[in-house]
Structures are given as structure tokens and as C-alpha cells.
Length: 81
Image (tube, rainbow, N blue to C red; front, top):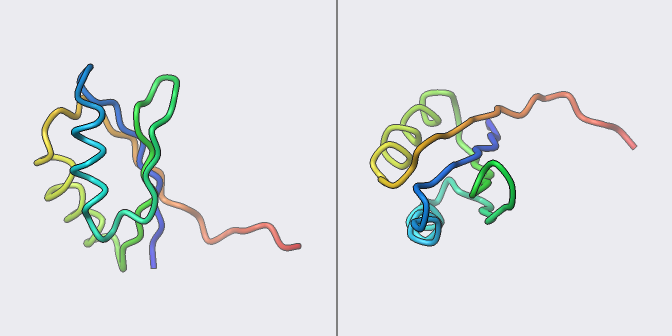
């Protein structure tokens, strides 16, 4: 399982439309509207890098109204308590 955080900059005034479109994808486990340089933050879970590629191609590039994305793949390194 691969977990990725995707930061999105939407075209001004389309943030809600992008939010509603992306939240419907089953790979999107969490989605937040955020303040600052980015408009949305997604937590996405996929089975492998190919599925992440497919998500980028089918969801992000076809959604429209997205200016920029930044994808960060979570490391297997974790803090142990």
C-alpha cells in the first residue's frame, strides 16, 4: 500500500468544484480545504506506483480547474512510541 499526500492549487473561484469532484474518488481517503499557497490537501491510498500514476492521469489531469499539484509519497519510516 502506498500513501501519498497531494497538494493542489485550483484556478481562483473553482476550489469548491475541484473539492467536490475529487472527494468522489475511492482512492481519496481524506480531503481538506487549506489556507496558504495551496487550496486543497488530499491523502490518497493506492496499491502501487502504477495505480498512483493512473490516479494522476484519470483524476487530477482530467478534473480541470487545477493549476498545479505537488505529490509527496509517504515513507515507510515512522515514529515508534
